[in-house]
Length: 240
Image 1: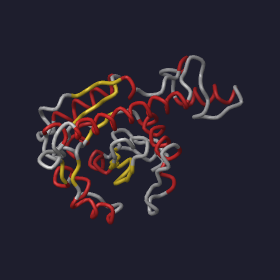
Image 2: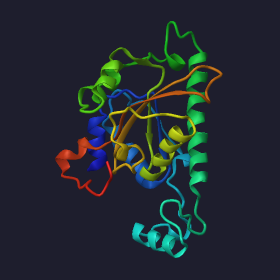
Image 3: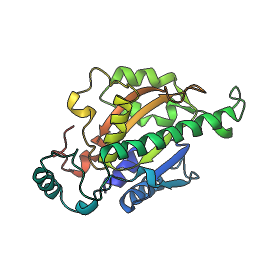
């Protein structure tokens, strides 16, 4: 039901690319979202292992309470604790960095392959504010930011479906490695919190050829879950 609600919210957004973790719950969410999306119905979902949730080794599949007990016994705290056989946070961030740089290079290569004066990326028309209007028309946060998007056009509009803790590490990569800063009116508790199920974040990335390692990053919204309001979904246990 939550994935269906996210699909309804994103139903009018035109995506140029769709990527998902290849784990089953992410694949199901991506498929459910795209079933509701008419503007992008011909877009193929690409499944990529680099978008997988962090590997927890011997703690895989255990409740968070068990992981905290293991961490305490080792004299450490979650989430920095790495169970035997699990991935470190640095390894997860390396995956996030690799995939982000792949996306940036992909878009730059596509846009440079054609005459941008006539067309957008890889023969597509450019994506305009109309194509991601739900973020503008239904936003009750960062209104000034959304107003700035009205005249914006993009070479690519990419949907990523992954996992909450993984995306938290990706955003930490933005902040700590790429020196991204959040809008000043965003609550500090939300910046690096784990997203609720089907939480939606929207970032606008600006790139220059030859400067992929120095992107300009703008946050429109982070961890939105107002599309779940009619479901009476319990999100009180998330820090948002």
